[in-house]
Length: 326
Image (cartoon, rainbow, N blue to C red; front, side):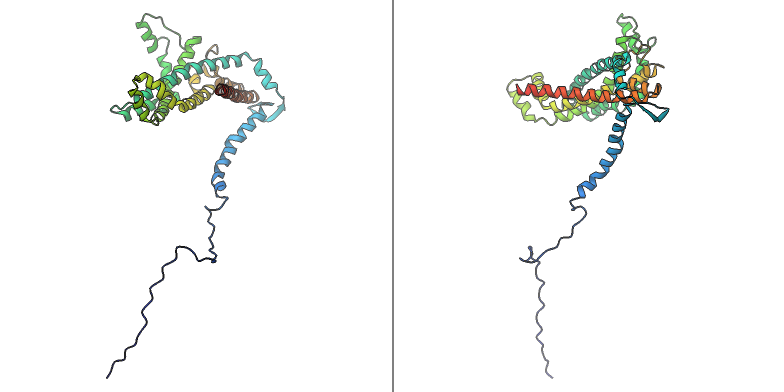
């Protein structure tokens, strides 16, 4: 019996997929939600909605209330007064007193704060042991509650049993009434701000210092520059944007200063002392709106503060442009 062999064709190997589609063949790509041209707007929509609800609308509503006589007890009852609330601020001696106190406390707190922050950042930039620990210590005052810090400083500056007067007594200086003195109270409030924000600004400067190329320091050292000249001619130009940022934020914070002067005086509240000696614009706004219940006047003051900051920053920018053009 003979076997019959059947010659079967060998199985074909699967063709390799071509890397490119054939010429003339249309390739359809299904649009995905992420690839849609409207996707960026959809992703940004939550931010704009929240910003409009909690940023733009309160700002416009405050501006509208500033042109009305409206009390906090009856916010729905409005009487159009035009620019009366703004004109009344110009004739109010307490407003000018609060403005003067805000400027003085702002200078006393901002200038030493930024200078100390530069020094602390320069020390932290040096390769020393435990740099992480010292950075945490520098940031600890910023993480402390403003109420706790202010109450501790109020005890520190106590007239009868405070440590500040005790230290002055060792130097032969008589006791100082830190809460009722005209300049002493401003200095005390400024010291609280300096203590809380120096470490925060120091870490910003430290981050900026670490971006300065080390080759510049090596070249300056080869040229015989001392550590001080390296700091002045290499470090300061490198951290100039950070200094501008902290100066801007510190100025805004000085205008909005509220918690420290409110809690510093024992029972003084929004008046900022018995003679309003350290009442800031933030305290005066709170007194007008939530103590005297004059919501329209408080709204006008809020817009004056905003416009004052805008004018000040515009003047600084104009001066910088004029200097750059020379």
